[in-house]
Image (cartoon, rainbow, N blue to C red):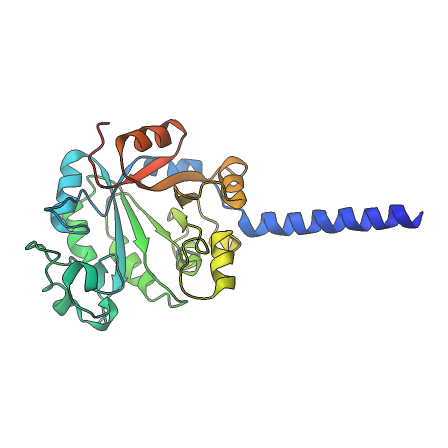
Length: 275
């Protein structure tokens, strides 16, 4: 074989090899029948407003009454209770410069949200309130490889009769559910962490943004930042591998309608959709 042809063959084989490795890294696992109940819009942290705080029992009750599925956030108190709260610190919502994970559940449930009388709820309280009336999209919060949150959440959900699925930016948390609750529908949250200038390892942020760690959890759906729709792995996962598509955070009716017409299910806040 002539040297030029040999070089071309080696080059082509190398490119194909890297392409197959990339596909193996970013491939989700479509589960069309299992994910079907969750293909709908979600009220982001409940149906909150200027007078009703996010991730509060009042916001969840309003969403249930309006018939909207609910997206919410969970993390652990210092004594292992699953709390419903988005930020890692209480600064923005409670005016206290302390991490949620540093306080016990009793201390957290005494904290009021914003200027309201609403308090930080536990996941158990939210499950009792929703009681299967609408599906739940539960975001697992976690910035490390610690998966202690997962069995605590699973223990509560094992006895829950309603429909629920989990999502996370952290593929290690989703991997726990993949291994220990195989029937659970999982979704990988993503954004462009480099353009968002997030702290932490630039290598890890790039790998998460490029969805190179998808293989750890093989999600059934992607939940992606509407500001960064053109990432190749994201488009390939949805268009080629058939992953369901949820999009966040939709802020107005026009974007809501546009995303629905494109087959993307909005996670919305700041307004009440007409339909």
